[in-house]
Image (cartoon, rainbow, N blue to C red; front, side, top):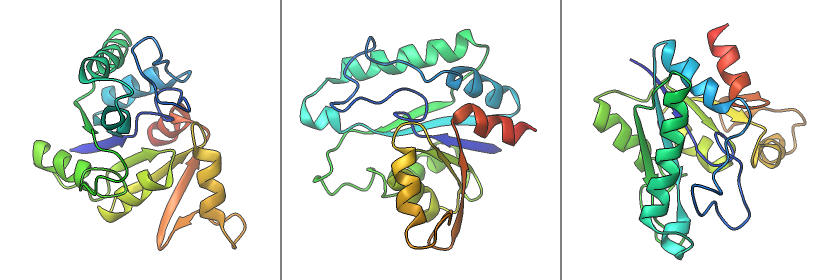
Length: 186
């Protein structure tokens, strides 16, 4: 099975400083929905893994989150694709859970659900914590420059200007999710 694990906010949809709180707030980044459909149609099992601390903070409730995910799922289906699943962490940063990225709990759950190893799976994120979770599981790391991606690239570069590595793991950098999919399917 070819597995692609996508972060949500900043990769698929635009981010907001105070969380995306409703389906109306949830707006896809240009080209992201079509990219997901193309990836699935090329034989990838496409899964979303997202931290949703707004649940813990009371910024929105489970019904709001489910409405956002229903909108995402419907848009992908309308584009001729399919999401295999959406996994989310409902905890805040101080909750010490194992599912909040950078911990690998969401990816562990994906492995268990699909009875597959995430080793060498594609992981697309816009933040360091996304990449760290994927690195722990041996994923191929793809950073998009949408969302928090520009800031994350600066964090990765550190002292070695232009370095695109997270510790010993290479990080491929792309403008957006569409560019990731263009590269994978080229």
